[in-house]
Amino acid sequence: MQLLRTGDNGPAVAEVRSALREFGLLPELAPGDGATDDHYDGSVEQAVRAFQQGRGLITDGIVGPATYRALREARWRLGDRMLALMLSAPMAGDDVFALQERLLELGFDTGRPAGVFDAQTERALRGFQREFGLNQDGICGPATLRALRQLGRKVTGGRPALLREQERVRTAGPRLRGKRIIIDPGHGGPDRGVTVDRVAESDLMWDLARRLEGRMAATGMEALLSRGEHSCPPEAERAAFANAAGADMLLSLHTDANRGMHAQGLATFHFGTADGSTSTVGEALAGLIHRELVARTRMLDCGIQPRTWEMLRLTRMPAVRIEVGYLTNLGDRRKLLDPVFRDIVAEGILVAVKRLYLLGQDDQPTGTFTFQDVLARELARAAGSSATTQ
Image (cartoon, rainbow, N blue to C red; front, side, top):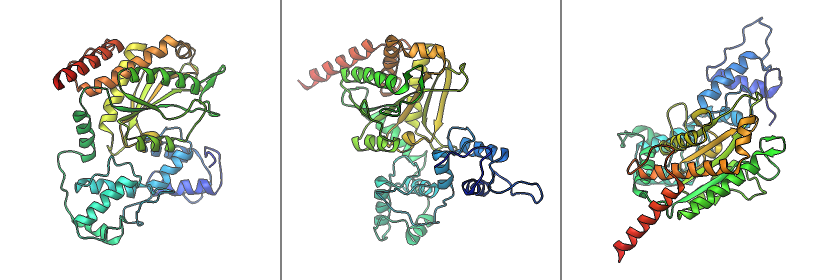
């Protein structure tokens, strides 16, 4: 679709205005004020910014594919339509999110609620239907909806999906060996991402991904790349690959850009929505990575932020997107062009992953844990396990 911004006109703008009014973000047109319902003016831009901020999107006041998708999905309420698994075009919307939350409250595992009706949601729905004597068709129709609304909450003490995420990390143990990590170098192929002075984001992130892959392999982890050197699968396809691989986590590597040459620094992102739905482990991992990299690189701290981008939203495991500097900033670009700097970033990410599984035990201060320390600990644990089994 075309990008919609201030000054645009047409039926697409009228659709956006209608949705914003429905959400209470845009008032009705007053008679005689001269405005038209198909014009994208300053009031529409401000309403779009408010909507984007509330949905965990980039707050730029422009309606692109992600914002348009979110506007469309936000209009659905549970009961507006029948919900079912559609493999070619999965159903998505706030009604799916509400269904997932309700099933989780009743003790049926849909995974982290993300508003997309997937196979795990269907399994949870069929489980509910089976337990409560309903037709086990995996479709949320009138009878299933009535049953969902009549029953009280079974799970208490926190959001079930978040508790399950935390428990999986706890039971995984501190060893890195055997853990499966998806490394996602941003862009690729004809999509070179941010490009400044013939320096391309896709090339730098591919190099960083390979450095990180090598270090992870040395510790016994199974590191898989989400793309080839000259390919660029869409984010939904990369997320599907990670889900199919049964990965323990996904790390997406990017650099940023800004019209102003003074914008600089490092930011990390995890899945999170305005209503508090989040990936607890993803947020913890983002924090660990962020603190390690800020301490090691001395880059400007641009914070840890929740987002609903497809890569973070569609993955079933904790996922973190790392924006390593701005290629449009001379200082950040010089750092990124230095192979030694990229080694430092790779080491910091690996150490942060190790810290996640240590759960605060036998840890060291931020920025002091090294790749050699990680290797030594992995070898010591492996030797201890061998001695125990003999």
